[in-house]
Length: 139
Image 1 (cartoon, rainbow, N blue to C red):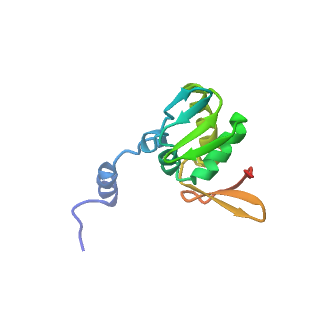
Image 2: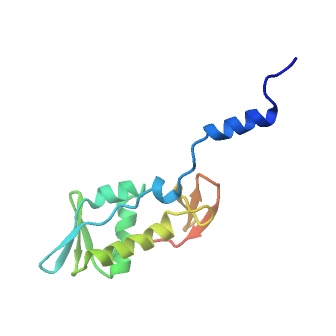
Image 3: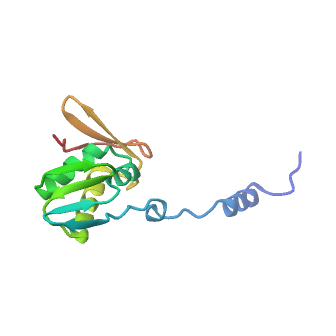
């Protein structure tokens, strides 16, 4: 049996057909918080959609912000209302901290993680590389 092309030629042709891998940043975009101050309260618009985009429960994200802002919060429809006046930039910095701690994998940097709680310990498990790390538990 004779072939027209060598193995190396076929391999080179196959590699040319594979699309270039784009960075993780281009695959996953962290949504930005939109908020406004009303009196002594800050209203974060579409908070539940934000949590859904992060693939996290809104209650978990809310607990994180409660602790980080040292503020009471309540859910009003799709929005979240925090007691206190907070700028958008500050809230987005806190969101970045949440993403780094509870979303991105420490091993591969991908956002394909799930949080699982067992025996009062919370684990972040990566579905992409299989890494498993302990993260702080929000009570």
